Length: 484
Ligand code: ATP
Ligand code: MG
Ligand code: MG
Ligand code: MG
Image 1 (cartoon, helix red, strand yellow):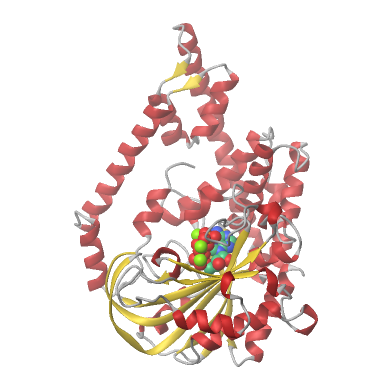
Image 2 (cartoon, rainbow, N blue to C red):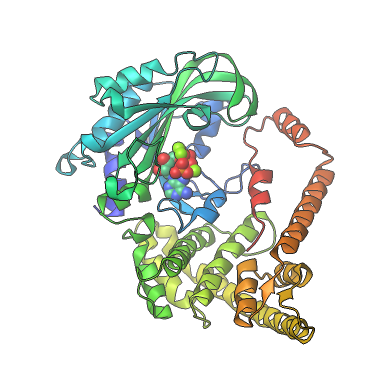
């Protein structure tokens, strides 16, 4: 099944079952505490918190998402993209747990000819909140277990897990509740037996069903919170990873090999004169390129431009990481004019705004690649001068200071510095580099707090609560952005 057909199948199934199809919101959302929309529920948040009344009782959507927290996973795991599409069905005080489980099971097990996704019921595993993790749920989510058994999932393939994995909350007081995740067994060639609790590569998480049943009064961490009372109107929020389902149904090994992404990877391999599959490290770089080109395209399409602040910096980092990965593969001429148009054709078929905005998005991407090339040229000179000094002194290690300067002033990622130093037979003092990075990050954090007149993150949360804000991923996500 093509990715576009899977999306259509999902949305049509829920429309047939009384849901309104709601278009994706743009990646940039007015919520100031979020860098980008990172889940299907984000545009619906006011309906879940009760601030607004939903115009529908049931909705379904295919939401564009960007998760910068997953950037380091890209290409290394088989399942993490910086951009991905989350399919979801939502109930605003209408149906609840039993029906949500019935819908999900029916959609994934019904044959593709009859409007389903056609997974083999024998490959399905589910997780639920297990016993003994929260005083308000001493026995765990026994209802969910019962409903899964009723649709035919054998008890031995229903696993109980803790609050980290199977309780959803927003990080602040408000709605929350247990969740149940659906995994597909990819087979013994992908890892060890024992279900998702044993191996998340072999058992691939495709879908998270959130049963929003409780009002939380205090949230100290994801797994440490107090429940005030059950919600009078219970909600359903689910998120299925479109690309994950696509790679299972297309019989490929990972999400970078699906129809919407692979042609970019293939073209990158061609440019580099590499055979995808020959060398693990090269393959990882090729997957990073394919992923980052696509996420950059989608961010540019939604109006983000490369720069040095927050969202703009994420885009800059993605574009430069793609270009950098190609350099590590031995390509030093511009690559985006070859790769970006391929992604545009692939994504434009489902997202018309990609085609509408193409002229200005491509111009911005190509300009950024040129700017990075100039930066690289200047940085290379600094590095060569430094290398010459080190060699003249008879040493074999470039100090942390120059490596940090290359990063800070010239946007040199540390692995590029390492690579270029190695070409000259030199090492780099990475420990010193890292401690300079940490110092800089601490300074930036202190500055950010000072700007807001805050001294601790607890105070930041208190302020946000007073403002009625419910997500606060800004600091943690931004703190992740330590290297390009
Ligand atoms: P994982 O444990 O694999 O990181 P998650 O538990 O963080 O996934 P959820 O927050 O439950 O993911 O999101 C709902 C669904 O969205 C997941 O079940 C998965 O199918 C999909 N998804 C989440 N993160 C990504 C990603 N980085 N790339 C592609 N799909 C994703
Ligand atoms: Mg995750
Ligand atoms: Mg997970
Ligand atoms: Mg999950």
